[in-house]
Image 1 (cartoon, rainbow, N blue to C red):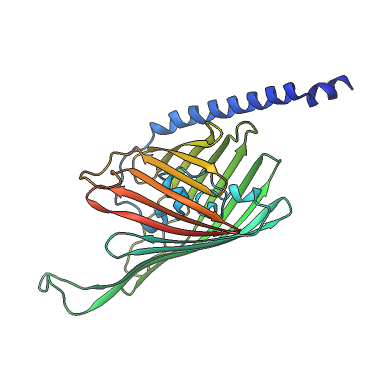
Image 2: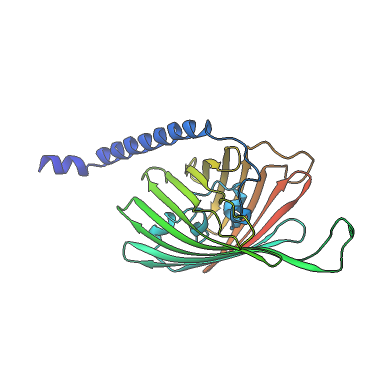
Length: 324
């Protein structure tokens, strides 16, 4: 009886949360330091690069440091473990103005189930028609071809305890270049741990894990851009949240991403983030590697916008709508 009273005492609960939180933070930074020394630059060695284009103005406004802080259905892409904690049906739609008149569209829906959730997402890179050129016709042959990518994802997520959950997403992938179509499958594995103190959460995700894309006869398929992410988020003050994330793609150098999210009232948020990978040269607004955005919550709808700087390349804008 005395042991039961002791474990239910507020001081004991606070001490237990502090121990778990400190242990989780130490584990995060130890793994981060080990991961930071792995791999190197392998640009151009993987296929289906459109899988790296993440949806969501909040996620991208935080420079992609999103695997532990999200609370909407865009988490289907960033960390399927997050949606295991959802208790209401949610939908999300995102439009991205990518480079050179290319757009990226994404929609996702999460449906809660007992001790978990089911989800579905659809992402598409739309490049339209491009005029063909060759060595004899550098200004165009008069013929056009299409280029783009598409994936459909199915998510199963479940909570193990009231503070730990996981999610699995199976993706069906198609990439098209003219009359050549590549097909493949990939798996995303994500977990989320809620420390229970100052809203500290730790997320770990392995994305785009799968075999080489299947290529038509006469063509060669290449590997997918497997990406490993670890992130932690929490309250710095009553209104200010901080996020830190380490990321290692299989075809690029590792990078650290961090962000700040200001929540002055329940209906409005402002966020800023920075990707510490070596920025592209050139002046732009926002500066290369930096992102910013805001969101406005009205009834069941949340409207979001973000902008990300890429140096000499045009800034990328995203418009999002979340429905709860």
